[in-house]
Length: 325
Image (cartoon, rainbow, N blue to C red):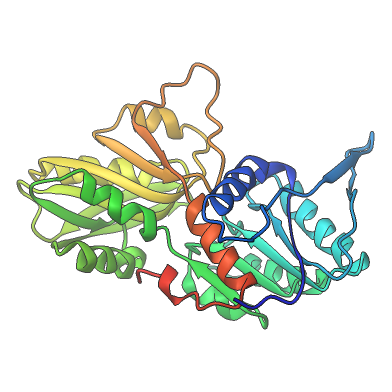
């Protein structure tokens, strides 16, 4: 077990709850003589015009600093991460590692229309310019985003927690479904691990967040289907897919998606859908409005996975065991 510098873990405001769970998970697997990990003190001073300034209230000089923050909207979450990275570099941290469970703006990974930005590449450039030495993230919308960085990227997969959960359901006629062609590779990897068939849904869109039609390809009748995806936004695609699959004779339809964005009428759509269950992780905190029925939503924590990958990176251990696919 090799280490060069002390470890410091800090969390920006949007992901503090997740960071506390990571610390707890780390401390449950201490080896003899190892010090307990704690969450460092980071204060954010707000200004009346909406600006803010993060400040470390303890020394980080010479330390390996992990800064944890998911960059879901509003954009202030990304800005807070960037300012905190900059503060760590200016405070003489030896290494600064950005732990971004949900990498926002990842859907903007290419020019799919004329005269649009490639937001994911720009965010990668900005993180590098801020001084980050390494990035850890989970289930990128497009795996090639790793290539947008010229620094190491650890890409963790939620299959590490989803596959055991799906197994625990003991579904008699399990099939894995991809909600669109872009998710086919992910669905195939799940199906291979679970030794079950694959169903592919082909969808067309009228515009962003609006699905025009979905067609299912594969054996559906009598199957207990789990749709796998990287994120749920308005849940329009998943609900429409469930409707199509049930109409073709599926016995049940569930969905699992790593990042529960759940914007707009997502909860209403899920509750009114034919989905039996929706599984998400805690990379984005569940922010259902008060009084919202969340009985169909199951949250599975990624804290153990991230605690393990942080430990392996800090102690210079291989991380390949963290990847199911």
